[in-house]
Every structure is written in structure tokens, then in C-alpha cells.
Length: 191
Length: 191
DNA sequence: CCAAAAGTGTTGAATGTACACCCATGG
DNA sequence: CCATGGGTGTACATTCAACACTTTTGG
Image (cartoon, rainbow over all chains, first blue to last red; front, side, top):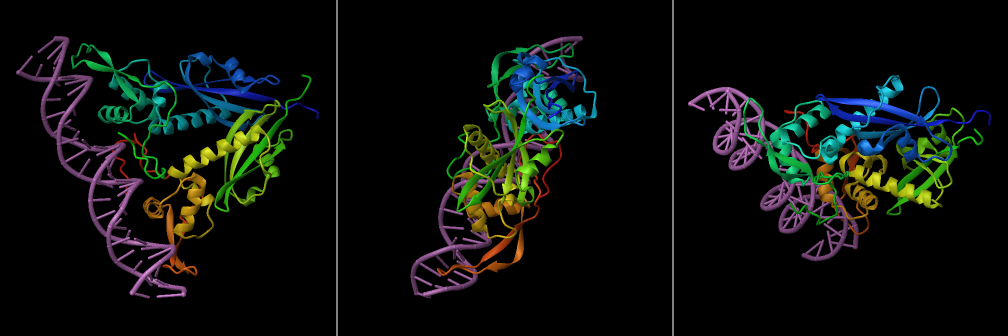
């Protein structure tokens, strides 16, 4: 075997900044016998990510095998440059959008505590369309995804009622849409 | 670089046989600059698979990097042998079970035409619990996943009403659960 | 006529959307 | 007292599970 196969690990980091879903990427060559997670940790500050999951493995146009991870949180990386990288970013965005509707991934976009309006803005930025604060609150509370936390946020200079503070009940990924069909008989949600 | 990194491509093939969800695996070493799909095609008869999707990339316990695909259909492969392989099979089963409830993947388990009872048995085997033929029919027809096809199947020696024949409207993967939340405002299902 | 298998009707619960309305604060 | 933003109530549509009932066949 002449040339040894090279493989790389990519991180695609998404976060909401300035009301937009911002994307950045990082990559490293995986060392011999190094675990994927270890390589990922060299590429990006994993501690600063609230959630990490594997995205996809592809052969890039230059022939390297790339295993991409989706990271959500505050880690810093560089802007995507190549078409390959932009394509991975698209896949990451699509994955996030899908999971926002049937899981609690929102926790990875939000700070520890927040108001419903702030959460609405985060969801709106991530989904790319307006979200109703009213219904977002109802859905996430009914699912048990959000918990109320004491205190409230004082209104801004324009006035308005003080906003109650919430947090995510869990900060680990969980599927929360109770409406998945074809469950075993006699397994109703307890509400 | 002393030893060149080896990477392999796995196929995990699932199908319903004899009322059970049967699993088999196949693998090949990927050749230099070979695409993942090409390697997969050397591992297993992809033409005999009704659906293929990437599952996961892992470092196996012997240090090889394995990219696993989930295949559904009639391709033949060998029984899983190692703990690594059994673990991939578990991941494949879990993926299939989840997707059965919100996509049309059922097409990849079913023949071209079938009765609702036959489909119920396929779903039951794949999900691992009983499925109601009544509700399965209603849900899949309402979603437009199934289409009625002319004719019917004659009853067996025990008698009974002849069963109508159905087929999947599409044999490509599509997400069909209309109940995903957080859709853009004013995008009601048309029924 | 009876058993067996297939298919339809109906009811009730859970979930989401839309929108009207009320609440609390700053000026 | 009014504007502004936050929060609740309520009505309605959609989806699904459960189960009773009807239909169509073989013996």
C-alpha cells in the first residue's frame, strides 16, 4: 500500500449570535489509534459545547475521509471555507431544526435561565421563522421540558410586565414528542 | 507515519424473516480513494436493498475505523460475530424502530403489494410488539403512505373475508408524521 | 348457521394552533 | 391613563388508541 489513508474529524459548531444561527467549523487529522472523541477534543473546546452528536462521515473532494460532529454551544472555530464545509454546515442546520421540534435540544442554545421571549428568539433564529411565545411556552411546559425558576426579569425602558424566568428541566438530549405513533398497546402518556 | 490507518465499511442488513427481525452484517476494507458507497457495494448486494442510510462511524476495539450503513431488504450477509458487530446491529434496530413511526420506511420491509394483516405482521416483528391492523391501516392511509391497489387476496382454508391489497405510495424515504411541532405560522396540514 | 378474518364507525384523550383577553410595569 | 411587553383562557382542528360492530368468506 503506497499512500496511507488519512482521516479527519470535523466539528460543526452552531450557536445563536446576534439573532442569527451562526456556524463555524474546525478540523484535525486523526492520529493513529486516536479515538474520534479525542480528535474532536483537539479540534474544538468540547467543554464549551452544551451538546455534541455525530453528524455524518463523508469522503471529501480531496479524498480524505471526514467524520463530522455537530456541536451546539459557545466554542470558537473558524468560518466554513470550502464547498465541503458549507455542505456539512447545511446538514448540521437541518439536523438541529428537525430535532428542535421533537426533542429538548433547545437547552444547548439557551443560557441557564431565560425568559420565554428570549427562548422564542433563540428558536426563531434557529428555525428561520417566527415562533409564537404563547404556544412555545405551552408546548414546552406541557412536555415537561421547561421548569419555572423563582424571580423575574425587570422590564426594559419601554415598560411592560416583568418576565418570569425558566430553565430546561434536563440538559441532556431527550426525545420529548409524546405523539410518536405505533407505540405498544396500552402506553398512554400520563400528562 | 509507520502504520497506515485502515478503515472499513460495514453493512448491517435488517429484514423480517419468519416473523422476526433478522440481522446480518458484512464488511470490507475500503480501498485507497474508494468512495464509501463503492466499498459498501463490494460488501453487500446493494441492488437487493430497498433502502440504505448511513448509521454511525466508530473506532472498533481493534483500532479500525468503521463506517456502518443500515440496509433494509433481501441482501444476504453473515451473522454478527463480535461485540462490535452486535452493538452496531442494536443501533440499526433502534434506528429502524424510531423511523417506522414517523416515516414511510415500512416500504423497505414489505413486498410490492400486501394485505394490511401482512403489513401488521411486518411492523409487529420490526417493532417487537403487537400492532393493531385497524389503526395501522387508518394511520398510514391518512398520511397517504399507503395506496389501495385493485384486487384482493383469497382467504385461507379457515375462511374469512378476502383481504384488500395495498402498496406504498412511494418507495423512497419520506418523513410523514404531520405532527411535528413548531412549524412556521399558518402551515396547516391539508388533510 | 357458525367460525374466522377483514374492514368500518364511533368515542374519548392528547396535542397543537390561533386568537382574544387580562396583567404588570414605565412614562 | 396609555403604551408596551408578558401571560392566560378558550375554542377548535388534528391525530391516535380502543373497542364495538358489520362484512365476506369457508365449512
